[in-house]
Amino acid sequence: MGSSTVNKKAACRDAEATKNSILDAAEEEFARAGLLGARTEAIAANTGVTKAMIYYYFSDKEGLYRAVLERALSRRLQILQKVDLHAAEPKEALRKLVASFIDGAGQNQNLPAIFLFESVQNQGKFYGQIAIASLYSPLVQVLERGIASGHFRKLDPLHVAVNIVGSAVYYFCSAQNVKHLWPSGTDLFSEGMREKHKAEAIEMVIAGVLKYPPA
Amino acid sequence: MGSSTVNKKAACRDAEATKNSILDAAEEEFARAGLLGARTEAIAANTGVTKAMIYYYFSDKEGLYRAVLERALSRRLQILQKVDLHAAEPKEALRKLVASFIDGAGQNQNLPAIFLFESVQNQGKFYGQIAIASLYSPLVQVLERGIASGHFRKLDPLHVAVNIVGSAVYYFCSAQNVKHLWPSGTDLFSEGMREKHKAEAIEMVIAGVLKYPPA
DNA sequence: GTCTATACGAGGATAGAC
DNA sequence: GTCTATCCTCGTATAGAC
Image 1 (cartoon, each protein chain N blue to C red):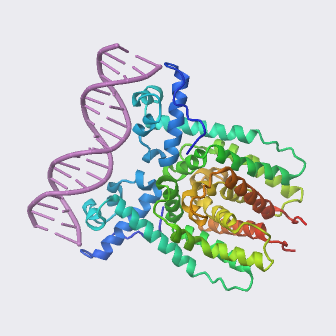
Image 2 (image 1 turned 180 degrees about the horizontal axis):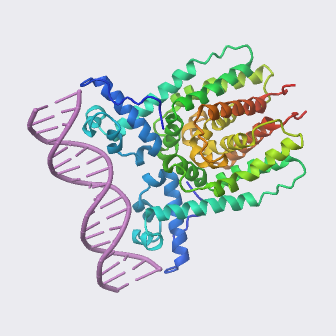
Image 3 (image 1 turned 180 degrees about the vertical axis):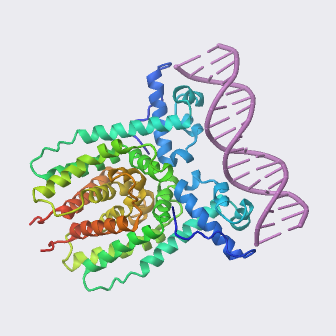
């Protein structure tokens, strides 16, 4: 489960390596339990170092939480910035954006859960207007461009942006519930299932915003 | 916040009233914090009775959690069963189903969070195949009917069902994060915003599954 | 059925040696 | 920078009176 590579500690007495190791384990734990449910002992157990190191580097549990959220946001933004939005058609740009959200969630399954926990459990205290705007504005702008160019139907860019993200990432967060829809043993996080999800989500979203449908 | 009416206790020494009062407060707390993050003291504080009553009626915290999940499921199923799926067109049936998911989430904001917490935090241990199937099968069947009748495009009913629910309920779970997209002070749970969300979600979903688009 | 009081373990946080 | 040992609060759960 979780990220492909969890640093179990690289070298001895390497501050950066230790911090990253703690951040990795913490991200896993916060994604599983949220700020309230997370246990610092559980985090330490998945690290090459001891619990005391958490407090040495991050002062307290909440400081660690903030560091995890910050890193999660900047990772998401990095992924987002790699998407080339200057494709000729808004349709292509939108396709790439949705793919990026889903690939990002597939590679690091922690991110969707982290963001949702922050909203539900922490009332979204951490992320301010700037953070959220930078996450959503590429999507919102593509939608606006599509409407202006006549490719997309008249829709509310903000609501639709949120709903698009919902259809992209809800799959990952509710996976342990909805897995029962598929034959028992099916792994919803497997490469094959993720690709299938991506294809279906993209198709639905594109068809959902287009003014005139594909032949 | 939360449900419109939280029973603060009806009469004195009324077992049913007390149990319901505890269940209401517990649902609120579990929806906010999950099983791990929930505090029995917080639950008791929002009840007319003391913490000891929780253990008297539900043995322990997990027993209470199970009772809350059971009630949440049966409520959702009740809402679902009220939807008339014998409308002539699959399109109309789908519209009603999505509306039902959103209205249900609007009336009891706890339900989406409860279900997500169970998946992420508790690995979906509680809900088995039958529970999940009963939640999703109306939607899946309508999609299958629509494909068979030629109204809907060729799509994977399971994946699309999950993605439809995602675009319906993600809005509510991520509300405290994405609220910053709207002018400060906007209440995403207000009647007006919920109606707008419902309209946008339905439009996107319907357009997303139709084979031939509306004129 | 409901309350008050309390036992006890879990878990966040710190001190101080190395 | 890292560890071990420990403190002490918080939170689950129970005992027993009313």
